[in-house]
Length: 396
Image (tube, rainbow, N blue to C red; front, side, top):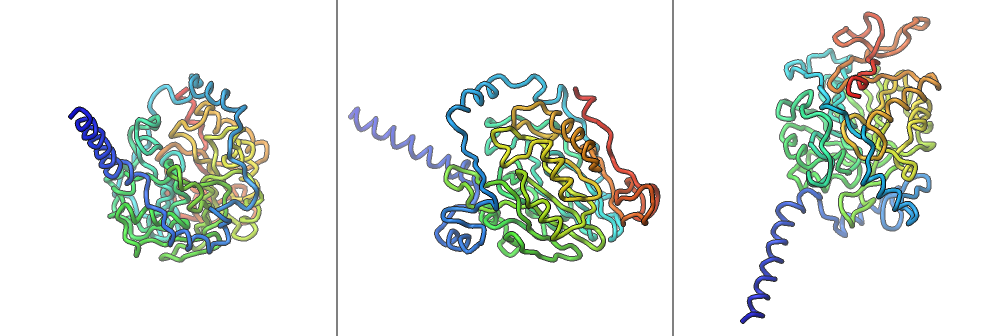
């Protein structure tokens, strides 16, 4: 009898764990890999043997000798690893979204790599991670620096395009997608990401899955999938089983580069030559370490990448929202500003929620030669300027 009770208890625990996995864990991880999907992915020029690969050899495995140092940094983080107080964002009136001339592009940063572009008369969201923690479950990570968003997820109206660069948790968030999916017309994603969206209830008819070099025109905006140097995966068995990318976003006279996550490499110059010139470039700056600089640039490399892309103005992203590395929370932006200034790269550092408008380039010879205009200014008029105050210092 005792053995039977133990057996039933063991079986009960197994059943409970299975139910918990299917109800709570499996949905967050995303779509399941199938032989059919692998067969389709393997037709890509970016696929090699068991997964997608970078253009240049990229090592991501830590050596045993680095583990003690990693543990020390993890257990004894820097005192200023996050702001002393919550970051206060610039709030946005939902009624103003879309109230922009078709030939103008308004930019709003939501922290980390989440950006809203009002471009070509529509609303485009880039890597919209609005969750509290960049992890599958809240207890596995630390909260974002700001409790409020410039525009809360529930306040978004219609979203024309939701664009994704890859499937990591700090870019592709289960909760955000589940909340926004009913408001999105089209999803433009990298090859392999569609399976996650479909698992979360998005219709395949709404999803456009692109490989490097592919492009799609939606309304007045063209989206081109371009290379990056990174990796992907949401679980223990799907590493590099979906593609990562950067994006070129063009509408009329406005051309934008979204670098997403990437280590430094020759692809920046190659993209500039193939798709430039750019009015604005979003370049990764933050969550780096010398041990994984092949997939996340150090600030000096981010500044060099900005120089390689050659945009009129560069905006550093992938910072200001989460602590995902061992550096202080302001080190990325402070170092980027220093190196970008040295390289004479024009950059903008808006607050979270602060908006600015991109207009047509200035006339030749204008001292304010550039493309960024003050918020609210009709494109093509007024003095050229862009947010550049060092707002993060007030949180030291």
